[in-house]
Length: 195
Image (tube, rainbow, N blue to C red; front, side):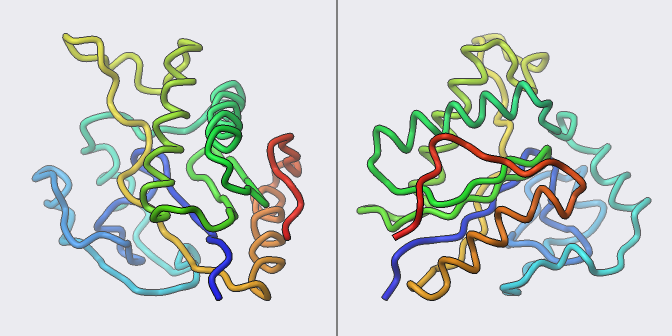
């Protein structure tokens, strides 16, 4: 019985669709990026970040992007947290773990009445509004003529459906994620104990 999800989504430029280690993408939508290879679709359920790859080529591919790769500052991470807090308070969806990293986000959330993909779209929307409201959107320098900022999150998400016995393991993984990157543990007020 599915009771929730472990969701990961990246910031713009964090994980490219043609990353040599694999990606969730079926296509590369930019010619400049396509020059570095086709999409590297994988159905791997575990992280592939450890796989060897050509760092120089990946860095060159990131430099070809239309906008700079988004890396959240501490203030921007706080704004992301405020957007999450707002979303989960109004939606009624349980959130059991959260790690906001400079280049990606981990969430462990309860099952919603709608598709998890829609939940992620809505979470990203509330978070973007908070970044804009605070005047610290990472791509604010790239605002178009109509005053719109580019999306600071990558398209899509990676998700794992969780049954009750999976939830504690997923929570532990998310809570340990900042520590693995040499950062402090995160304790967000909007995170609640799991069922």
